[in-house]
Amino acid sequence: MRLTQYFLPVLKENPAEAQIASHRLMLRAGMVRQASAGIYSWLPLGLRVLRRIEAIIHEEQERAGHIPMLMPTIQSADLWRESGRYDAYGPEMLRIRDRHERDMLYGPTNEELITDIFRNAVGSYRDLPLTLYQIQWKFRDEIRPRFGVMRGREFLMKDGYNFDLTREDALHAYNRHLVSYLRTYERMGVKAIPMRAASGPIGGDDTHEFLVLAETGESAVFYDSAVTDLSFGDRQVDYADRAAVRAIVDEWTAPYARTDETHDEAVFAEVPAERRREGRGIEVGQIFYFGTKYSEPMKAVVVNEAGERVPVHMGSHGIGVSRLVGAIIEASHDERGIIWPEGVTPFRVGLVNLKQGDAGADAACESLYAELARAGLEPLYDDRDERAGAKFATMDLIGLPWRITVGPRGLAKGVVELTSRRTGESEEMSAAAAVERLSGIYARV
RNA sequence: CGGAGUGUAGCGCAGCCUGGUAGCGCACCUGCUUCGGGAGCAGGGGGGCGGAGGUUCGAAUCCUCUCACUCCGACCA
Image (cartoon, rainbow, N blue to C red; front, side, top):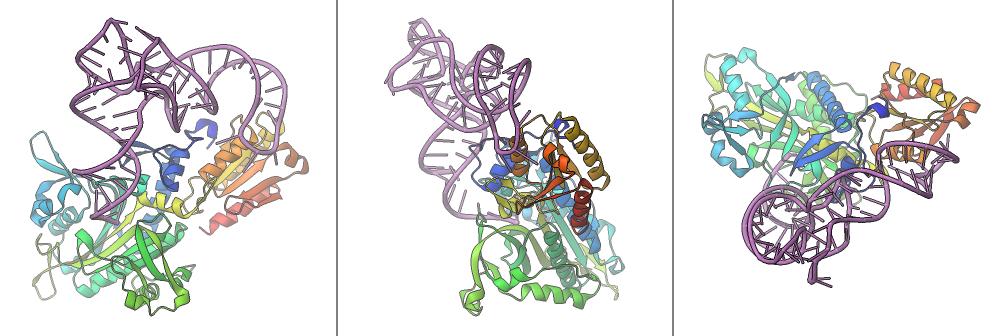
């Protein structure tokens, strides 16, 4: 993409309403615009990040054997009356009336709708196990939205639902989700720690929340530092192998890690003092096993091998997609701007032409731009007629992990400059070498 | 919902107390000079002050109502 042909309305000054880094930077980098309290428009740059996050989620969910679908944002109140949550949910649910005076609502979650779909289509244990998921906008009428997309009223969420014959099967689905989420977050370049959590309005016995450590997090967290040392790396997972999946879950859930809701000082005290950590975290996902909580009242039953009608065991699993954009920035920025992890960056490399209009520099940039695009490196070429400082400042602000700087001085020596946004370190090399280096880096994400 | 506060140009703000027909910086446009970390000079365009009503010869400034947004708190992916 050429910057002169893109829409990137960056702000030089900090918007008054933004209190925390991610909100401030998302507004300044031209990623979002507030439409009204807790509701945002996603501008082109922000949308690219959102799409990257969605893509990683889809890949990891499908890898785990889960099936994508899409349900509407607007739902009928009927199903919610059936489950008993129409009244239970309270004012957080945005209620709407259509022209025929029918009660509708903007879905805050989808257990009712998915259960209805399931019960109408599935009748036999032979059709199980089944895990369906979607990435769709949700609306929860927060009393007080704040922190930009981290605590909006409208937000994009991946929500998945598993249907299993037995508790054991459903717990395997739970474990599958825990593992797939670990992989998902790691690919996004964030450390999200699974923590035992309280269940909240979704309900259920077993639940873990995934929290990204950040000073601005809303939850206090207590954990054993051993958990932050774990990493998934290149290991392969056979999601059909229950013991193997369980082993990974055990590995990540063995170290103490809890939010303030479930924190137990006595247990925490057993962690060696030098590994005991307290901090704050941003919740970016949660998984639940809730058994037959919805299947019983909503009569989602299958016929088992013995010919008996039994309610299915269910669980639900969520990832806060739009919130993750903010959480990643909270965890990865500096005073100059955002620092995107390679996995979610909106463009993989920024190309800065230091002397726009100079025949040599222009030609070198054009050819490098084409080369980068051909290599799948999604370049953002700053071809504006701006001074070097302004181009650098823009690149630093929008936070592309790599920058190639092209100027007459380097071209005279036959080199361009490759700079890491994270470390600030620069290296001179030929244009071809820079393309090769970046290809190598991105081959691993 | 309780408490506090703010709405004036795309962004950041001044002006309001002590009414006289709107200003500064950045951004934007034109020209010249500049050009490896948000350039300089000169010229220029854009708002009628969140909305409605009122007081007044006259309202961004005073009064009434109203809407929106922000912050603190209780609540939440």
